[in-house]
Length: 129
Image (cartoon, rainbow, N blue to C red; front, side):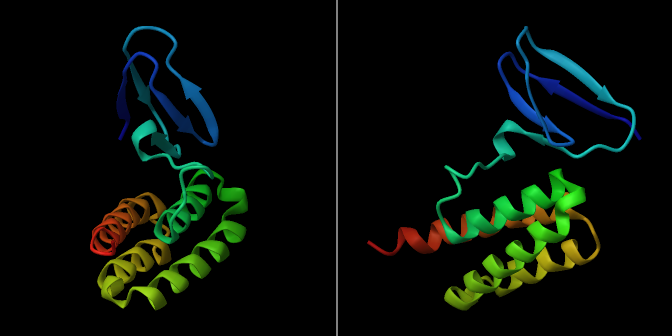
């Protein structure tokens, strides 16, 4: 089933590892076949991945966007996730969901669940002041 993507002026996104920016007015794109796509709002960079959960997300994001190097990124992802879980056992249900998606090779859904892990981390850190 094709994917229709509406892109705002100046919005960035990644398709199969290629960073793209819409230089014109808003655009609608239709992807006719399978592709690894992330919108600007879902992209983390080395500079923005400053917490343990964000580093896990970044490693999973790289595994998703660069399937030819996924084994490398997934090993780092697993390390980050294990470290996070050791420090925050309250995240067990979220981590289990992430691992289920990753084990089923549903990396995009794993990224969405990993976004919830970042939210969980933010909530936990908000109480530490």
